[in-house]
Length: 332
Image 1: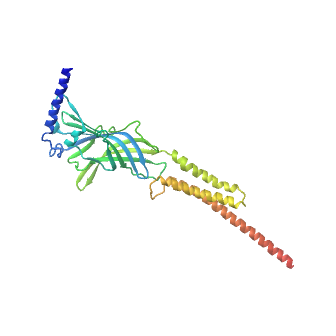
Image 2: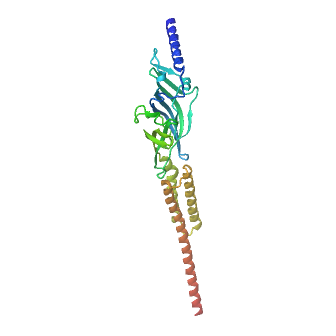
């Protein structure tokens, strides 16, 4: 036991000297390979939870383990271990990529109970840097087919300051395997997460060309909620508006109440259906459905009013004709 304790203390002393030697004279303001070669950042994403999705804000929230790996020859070492498991404190003393999320609205790095960061250093200078992040990102939506719509929500990230001539991003295991979603990771009530893809693109600015890494998450909306909350009530309201034709045609108050009530009901359903959507300038599939239902309900009210008007007018002409006929006979 004493020998084992002495061996552990000896290893700790060795690695302490190694780390002190590595950081002695190290300038974390300069990227690896400056002036000689491009720094390659290998990345991959593991999604622990996806959702919720906000239709009104056109954004989604995602919880990920974001991993980055690169090689820094200044940190090569020789020791009894090939890899050093380090805590997050060393990350502030070495160069790390200036990665940012292009379409991110808000990002949170978790710090309880300590900063959720992992750093691994291999003897050849290769570093693995992992962070746990919660990201709220933009998800542009085209809602013409709502609520039978589908969307591709992007997650875009890249270097903030370094163009491709200095830093380039790649996927660790290729685009097909570098974005993984946990089996129980979906936190969606109104959508199905049907898959994800990854890729890259280049953007050009006045400062040069930049690499942008992209992951797309494909969502399909669940229609059940809208069938219960909108489609069925509209359908039943249309049927109710037609019931008034079964009433006695002289029951004007009852038929008027039926017509006005169904029109007001359709108006309320239309407003409530729009509350869960952003204020877009075009009509959705649900808007067209509600408009057709509204037309049926409103036409039933107009039809009754028209028929009632001409029926009363016909009675008036019949009475007037009888009066003239009776007066003519009296004069004779």
